[in-house]
Image (cartoon, rainbow, N blue to C red; front, side, top):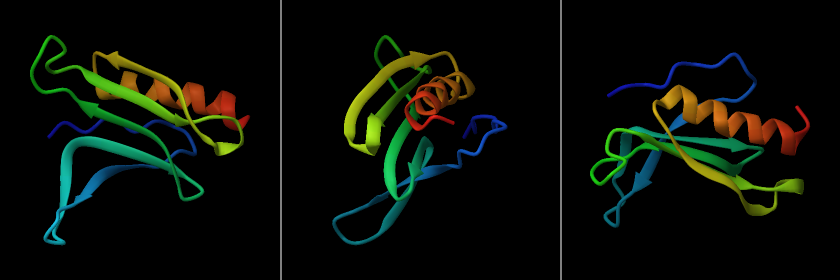
Length: 96
């Protein structure tokens, strides 16, 4: 597992947890989520396979007023770049 370096911001990233049909919870190694006020705001994860293998996909999932919206997606070379891309968009949306 390669953890994205921590940024010096007010955002707190957590590993993404998935609940299986049998109720068990799996914690993903290279998959991180960010919630703001209980709302899923962003997600980054390492891509496995395909032309982007080893790169990090990022997505910002909220817009103005924290409404569900695709505010941006992309690929980055590492977890830190993916995190910074999300946080830059969220600062604009949240006015931070």
